[in-house]
Image (cartoon, rainbow, N blue to C red; front, side, top):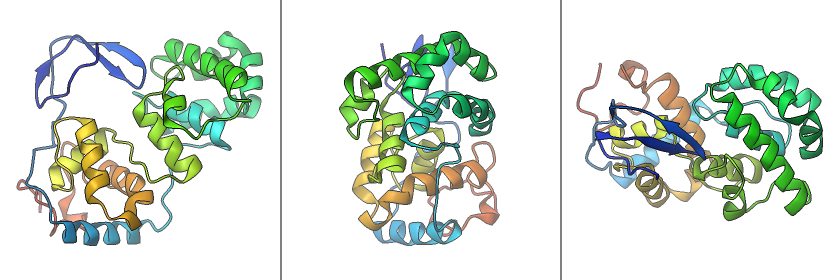
Length: 248
């Protein structure tokens, strides 16, 4: 079963983008993401104007050469760092940058290339299976369709959102741990689960910022508004942020 994310709960399994993870005890999903009041819409507009100035042309930090390698890289990034994924995929994509080449490489070959990434056994099976499906059902092309993407092994809503945004330019927002924390902490889009936060972001962020919002929020959450100790002194939206425990 897929758990509903609450502020603090006991769980047995978590389904993260098609990867079943077993865990024990209690998991605090919102650590560092204290629920705030909602930021004013006018302030959200100003916030993204400032964030856009820090990174005018935001892009994913995952390395890829085409929609297919993007899909594979994002699928591999679940519970892994972008740096770790990039190290593993450098040689992998040199050998297999299409579904046909990946299938020819085989399960053992895929595992050999990604064995430094967490959950590599399951991920290798997913990469092989999704490649076979792309060949059989989509003429070896990555579909520009959410339902078709989420039907692929190892591809959930977050991965589909990243692919639709990065490969096809759609104004989707993939809510990862950084965006979930940032949405709650700042008041831009408070919510108790990732789907609520995603819907609030799409509803509250002005259209002109939606294409880049995913990247700006991830970069800000990764390097400035960090989980354990946000660097509020370096934050360009600190005066707009509703987080009470600022480190300034």
